[in-house]
Structure formats: structure tokens, C-alpha cells
Length: 161
Image (cartoon, rainbow, N blue to C red):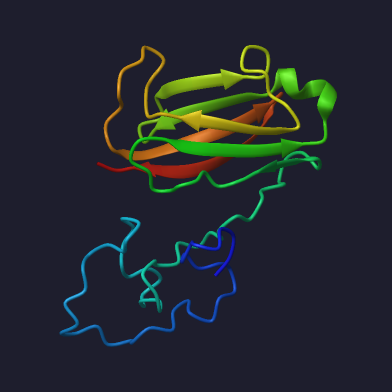
């Protein structure tokens, strides 16, 4: 367990990962977990309502800028809206950051940037599932990418009905 105290998603290193019954015959498992991810991942079920997907809950990604932390959106999956949070200690360059949302085909859906959206040290972007034209997008997998110069960090999110 980790992150939000009401989240039951597994964190990296949890003893519940791959600890479920190895023989799922006759268990009548649904094809997906409560988050809509495949119920069997890595060849074996986990203990819990959510299947480990190889990525931790609330683990910041610091892979491109030492002073920048991009978090997993919350909630994920989401129905109406989700919040994407990043934290930066690089105060002077926040106006140069851009957050872009793409569909699974790689098509740009929505863009936020530090100049017009007033990014700050801790920035919460609430995405309402609308594209740049204000049209509701269809349910599915989307990617959000935080870009600074020629560097970027990308994470996945899921919009459900």
C-alpha cells in the first residue's frame, strides 16, 4: 500500500505482487481488475483488488531534471476529471514547461504551458477529458508528457465511462 491512505493499489516491492493463487482455474476471475487493467499480469495474479502493473503508486519520476517531480495523475483511472501534479524547484524556468496530453494513437489532444497556465512550484493541472476544441474525448488510454527543452517525462492514464 502507499500514497493516498484510501488507495488500495500496490506499491513497488509489495509482498502482495505475484503472491496470489498460481492456479486460477475455476476462480471465475473477471478479465480486468477494479482499475480496468488486465487481471493477470506477469503470469500470476496479485493479492488484492488491483493488479500490479509494473509501476508504483505516487513514485515521482526524476529521470530528466534533477529538481522536477512528475506524479501519477489522480484518480487513475478517472471518469470526469483527473489531476496531474508536478513539483519543481526551478522557479525561473517554469514558464518554459509544457504539459501535453496525447491519445493512444499519439495524436495531440490538449496542451498546457507555463506561460498561459501560470505554472508554479507545485502545479496541479485538472484535465476534464476535453480536447483543445472543448469536445469530450472517448474513453481509453491517454498519455501525458511534461516537456522542458529537449527533455520529457511521460506517464499513462485511463479515461473510463
